[in-house]
Length: 335
Image (cartoon, rainbow, N blue to C red; front, side, top):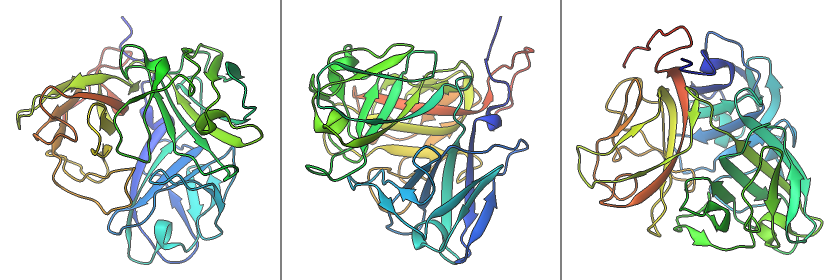
């Protein structure tokens, strides 16, 4: 029996907490394995400052923000290089201010790990198929219009467990809105192992505008993109993942006004895990959404509507620190 497709998650995902220097600085990832990242997402933990997102497809110094619908900008003070085991940043206070505390989350693009980055140009035509190289069906997609042609547009999120008909629905990464049902984002088409489909919305397919799409497909023991129902109790919902999580992002899909909630294993190295961030909001780290990272999943330890509201529906996105049981049948340790 195969318990995992990936014994060593550090080859494809790593998080890192670091203190800024205020001068150009190369940061090495903490894992035992070298990992050259293709997607780097950075947040100043202690300040109200934008999330900065960079990838190797768009290139260095090309910044997007998860907490806003801003168009892509060139920023010499941000990420200046992708390294063989990390990245280099310049002097911007959003990524490397002197004495400031930061966290970064880094992914390696790989079909093995179920992650692809696709840049495309919109054509405004309904039912447009765009190729990807996952060789598997995408379970989660984050799409962003990169320019301000026509108007700036929000991040459009596809999640395969977002209602029973996810191809008609979407969420906004940069907002707090509940799930919305609109056929013009994905053209009512479920993505396949070779293409994803976009409709006529400017959020996903404005004629001549450039877009970026981050696509993930679940890999057993490494990543999971699912849903759960909250119980409104401090002895909260348990979400089985099949691995010890390194990173967990969730969103209340029913109620408008609730932030996305993000936790990782670098800002909290033991339970209770309570240092949260909201990728849709520029605010600093908060400590009022408790959860436990377990050897096989996540246990909610709060009754907030943001992550465990009574009978509320949530979607989540999670990546592993270690598989619950590796391919040799060896279980991982709890925290």
